[in-house]
Length: 333
Image (cartoon, rainbow, N blue to C red; front, side):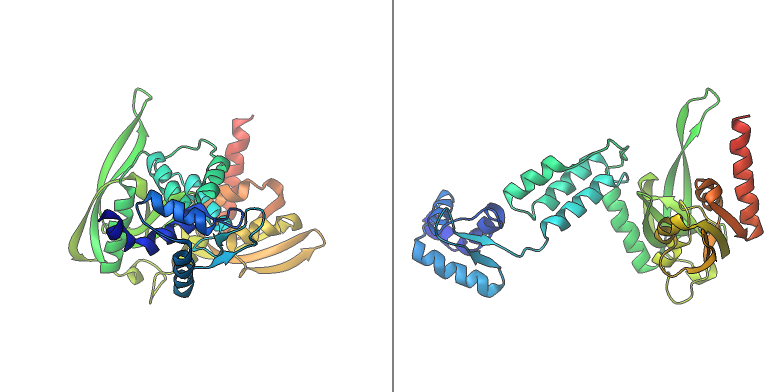
């Protein structure tokens, strides 16, 4: 009776066999398919397999037949994710230090399940891990889900936020603070996940690292409109906002102008995007004009290029860069 019952699941198991056992380099014959189904206590004959394959094809499975000689057979061609896409997703998860190591392992395993078993094994052996620090916050998935729900509902959230500090004994410890905030966006920047929000005590935007949020509670109070604390009116443009910030430091967006060596075009476009205004200064330099939040983060970013970038405006950014350079010089005098 078990075999008769399981036969109703035949098509589902057949689809799984193609997903797990085959790819463009690994084929399976009708006889081998029958053997695999037999392991699942599902009776099958070769003739019925051909009809089942036709049904799966009609449904949308890209099942391809290759030559019958030298181990030919059937394999699943087009998949939900191609191997290169799976590798990109896996690498991105590995690189994200806001995901704990346990959650990283679980998520990578799920991503690899979209490949065949042999592809997944090769992928796993090729994963490069540089031992970067990972958060120990195992509940970040739930935090992201609930914070996103608060953004969708447009309600305030009470959060307990952890910051590290140095004690009088010169040891590191944690300090918790509680805020009531209006959440507007979740942004992934520089391998951290940030919540862009407004602290109800102030009239500006603030950023909280999601993995440092220990507790959160959605309230019934409506969130403060972002138009009251930002330049956005109809919708909060996360991509535009992130492009104007550096290392998620807050600052007032204003026009900036940089004189750069020609060989810095790529890093400048990578940082500011393709919509910046570029103008030739001389044979070796160009001028870049855009809008960005003038902050300590932007000044530190400019300083890393040394004499290859010169700030032409605004004056407060020029001053901030000079201060940074002087601080560095003092350390080596």
